[in-house]
Length: 409
Image (cartoon, rainbow, N blue to C red):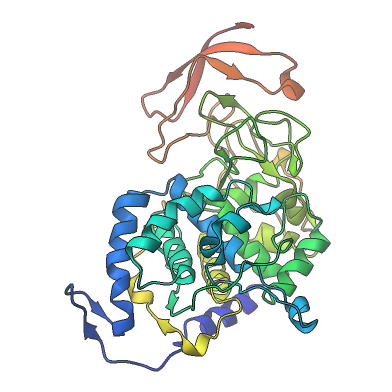
């Protein structure tokens, strides 16, 4: 299953431009090419003034931007003699009032607004380079994420990408697979690899009543929990029901700013489709395989519609990644093998332990794993049929919460 990933990784680690002797940059940093020198200052600026060296919301927003910018390319439009889009050309920053208003880009203005000041401050760097570089730098703050190859030298976008090229969570699997194939020749395995980014993603607009709704219980760690938890049976919604592109989640408990797990319809469908189910299941508890496949697919995404022969490999500017937490995938408290909706029948489901506890997991709102709870806990109506008012007391480890008082509200 992973042979194609290994081959692609070998391809993407090749140097696309000619080899250069290492040079000393004006700021004292060493680079493989003088063209990479300006990226050191940008890297440090991003880490200090945007990401705060954390795997927080700004990282989530910028990683989303890398995909939404790059996928706006269509080989079918190109074959018809129409403008196909520039792919990973930074058009989302160059034309911020155009692409931000695409239906699939709801909420993406947060990432655009975050990066535009850096585009002005570092005006020797193109918009396309900024988007992909910022994504690669931000990912290094997330424990377990790989170091992504970065090639520099993209020309600035000359036109906004065509509307309608960005997949949406309500799209069918057929539509998603076709769009990725048209948008850069991505295989179904590569689609699932790219979706590893959802392990550190949160949604602001799928449910309009919620902000920063996570897709798994570890939204600040690049791990395989996403691939496990999307296969668990849904029981309710963290906010309201009947939202486009959302299906029931297995862990919808919400308390104040600590929002329960939200499940995208597209993730649910891809995890259960026969064309993608075994790749999806195959990443569970396979951190190295998932990370390597993601790095290869991201390197391919970052150069969609670009002339790689004119780009310079500046990967040495990307910081070393934060090591993984080395915690195996586990069923969240109250969940077990009995909750799995297995779709891949060609391989046995991994044998996993369950986290201790008799209370449903409350997902931290902040990267430091702190909880921002009040005393009003919303239990999904579809699961409990009522609201309960509770008091939560953190245990000594701050990881386990206990109900000490309950009553109807």
